[in-house]
Amino acid sequence: MTIQLGNLAAALLLLTAGLRAGDVPVNADSVIIADFQKRVADYAQLRKGVEANLPPLKSSPSPARLSRQENTLTRAMREARKNSKQGDIFSPRIAMELRRLISIAMQPSDAAHIRQSLRHAEPVRLRLRINDPYPERVPLQSTPPSLLANLPRLPPEIEYRIIGEDLILLDTKANLVVDILNGAFA
Image (cartoon, rainbow, N blue to C red; front, side):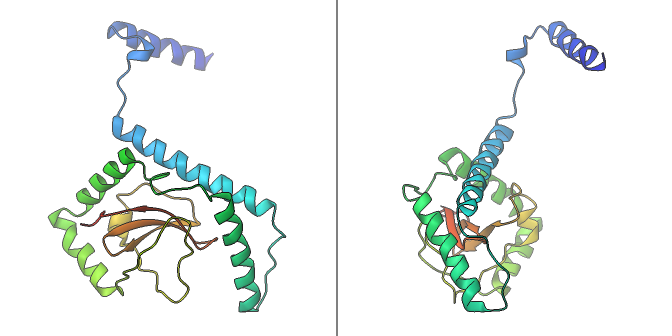
């Protein structure tokens, strides 16, 4: 009964405002972020499906064995995404919105802290492509927390990383570059 009363109250509110249910204004930025999060969730679901078809991972003290297991997942994901291209997740609309969020984080009050954090980390400059494994011997530059706070949340095994002026999505479990947002910090 409470749900029906809630729906009735919402309908009455729309009617008194002269609106129909389809006329309710939507925050365009939240729609873009929802699209981004759906694309990331679809990628994570794909990885889970690929992992389900691989031999189960076993814990091992052997770095060589762990590396082989990771390489198996990397190869399987590269095959599953062989037709992937830059912008599959960072579509033009999503890229524009993320650049806007980054610029907000880089306002004068926080920009100095973020730039200082990036300078203290070992700067990484690489040319990466979608579906490339992240090079083993290249350090991962951390993304400053104040910047992360302004970006949409990601599943635990997918991270934002900064490579030069670019923002990448990195699948840490498969060690795979998922997408690249060029010039995010230009």
